[in-house]
Length: 160
Image 1 (tube, one colour):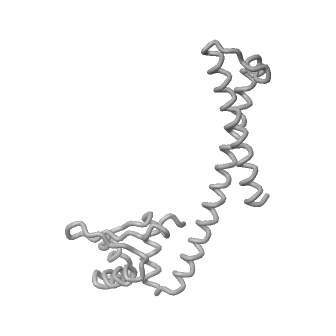
Image 2 (cartoon, helix red, strand yellow):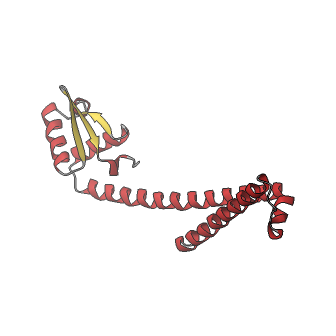
Image 3 (cartoon, one colour):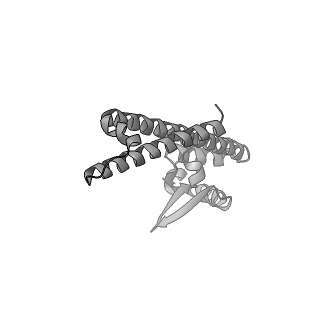
């Protein structure tokens, strides 16, 4: 089923759910103040338990449809970001790629001194690589006293 059909089905289920809730509230508000319930709505009073179960089913259905739509959309966005990250990695030097892999392993955040502890990396080299990545908009550097915290941009952080 394509996205437009899923959206249409989701809207129909949500509309039915809202309609059922509105009718149930109307019937019980009329009943609670002692007014007569119209004949067309009398079966709702007679079968109110079944009606509430039906509302629950529609609520679950609408929730599942909305979840599946949003989840599919998020997966597409993650795939696009992963593809973009792969393209970015091709244009970086091996040292830059190593720093990005470290950041990905550390959930997108580490200190510059930890980057300097990578094999073949010095403090000066780590500083230069971080500055270059920051200039390209791949990382942000936040200073906490003498500690530089290196964070990957939000768009790339959640990729693995």
